[in-house]
Amino acid sequence: ANWEQLAKFCTVGAAGYVVNLAVYTILLEGVGLHYIPAAIGSFLVAVANNYALNRIWTFRVERGHVGAQGLRFLVVSTVSLLANLAVLHVLVAAGVGKILAQAVAIVLVTPLNFLGNKLWSFRR
Image 1 (cartoon, one colour):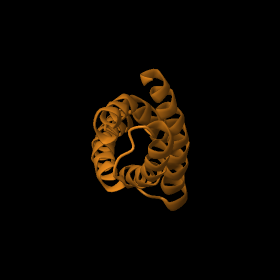
Image 2 (cartoon, rainbow, N blue to C red; image 1 turned 60 degrees about the horizontal axis):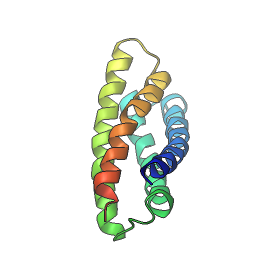
Image 3 (tube, rainbow, N blue to C red; image 1 turned 180 degrees about the horizontal axis):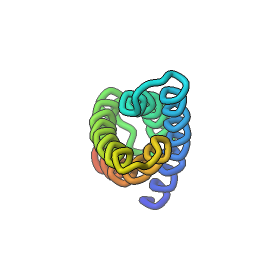
Image 4 (tube, one colour; image 1 turned 120 degrees about the horizontal axis):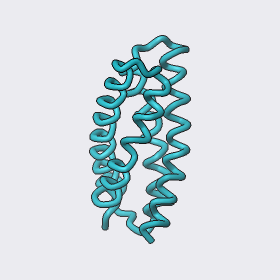
């Protein structure tokens, strides 16, 4: 069951990954935002998408009160965002391109995000 949930979480995460990078690229290159606000904006869009899909599909059995789970999901996502921003900043400062840096940062933070949501956000 844990492997199935991980697979579903990764599928939802892949969709969120595409959404995040697309919005990030638009905010960064289309709107001209600095990479940190662009990452925060893309996070907000992706997190709303991921919460809905994870609640409906990945952690369906563990579904509890929408407000309580939503608040816990937001806390875990915020911690993940802070970790993402730290990795993103280090990578950009090291000379990695901003879009590639965001792509790598999202991947590196995914295990933290999964564990937080599995063990806290969507627990019974």
